[in-house]
Image (tube, rainbow, N blue to C red; front, top):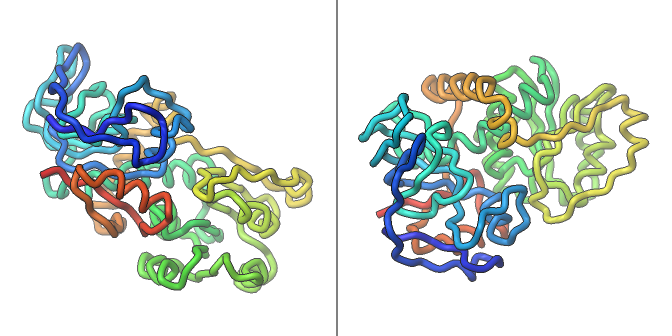
Amino acid sequence: MKAILCKTHGLPETLVLEDIPSPQAGAKQVVISVKACGVNFPDTLIIQNKYQFKPELPFSPGGEVAGVVKEVGEGVKHLKVGDTVIAMTGWGGFAEEVVTDGSRVFPVPPVFDFKTAATFAYVFGTSYHALKDRAQLQAGETVLVLGAAGGVGLAAVQLAKVMGAKVIAAASTAEKLAVCQQYGADAVVNYTEANWREQIKTLTDGKGVDVVYDAVGGDYAEPALRSMAWRGRYLVVGFAAGDIPKVPLNLALLKGCAIVGVFWGEFAVRQKQDNQANMMQLFAWLMQGQLKPHISAEYPLAQAAQALNDLMQRKVTGKAVLVME
């Protein structure tokens, strides 16, 4: 089978496409014939050895796959050969086949095409955990989404609307903001403009926002924290801007607000039943047409490096996906 391999840590250009032996399923494992694989920001970090998980070299990036079960190992009861599935593999998905623990694999209705299935769980799982479990978002509250045109950002925009909130989407271009409006944002601000904090103040009648969803970090974090309402919740989701911000903690005191970490991957491991309940709700909303991944770019496996570079350069709105031939 063909696979994209990270043999030495570095930027996407260091990745290589090679033929390697097909994997075998051990006890409690499943082999999946990969049909599509979502491209996510952690993929850009894991190949540089900058992510929380650090697989041994060589490995394939790609933690979100959709495909068909090829082989089922001893002890796996909820799957059979031929099932259409998604899997949160952590890594290994930039390949024609992947082996992973059966607990990471979920059957999905065949009505979902592989591209949708491969671009749904990661971003919506992260954003629903953030808004529901960490922010405890209530209907009628106002959410500011930073990086709102990205994968998790657009998922957060859609979910906050489904949950009854008012959404202010923040992004860097008019084109990205138009996508946010297409997916339900009530208002938009361009955070490259000097007066974006004043715009938020006007949009909230001076009250500020109840929840900040921050997957960007960098220079946008402190102005967003200063835009919080009393007893607001600031969600630390990621650092797509590249820099981990250092914010004045007195702002949390003055706002009476909480700064809350969001680590969906660890939540899914530590609280499996809660995560499964979340996923069932998300699939229900997807089937009802209330949620939809925005796929702006598709690539063949051989162009995985280009996909990662486009993501790093913030050329992708919503999701990018690798499609296997």
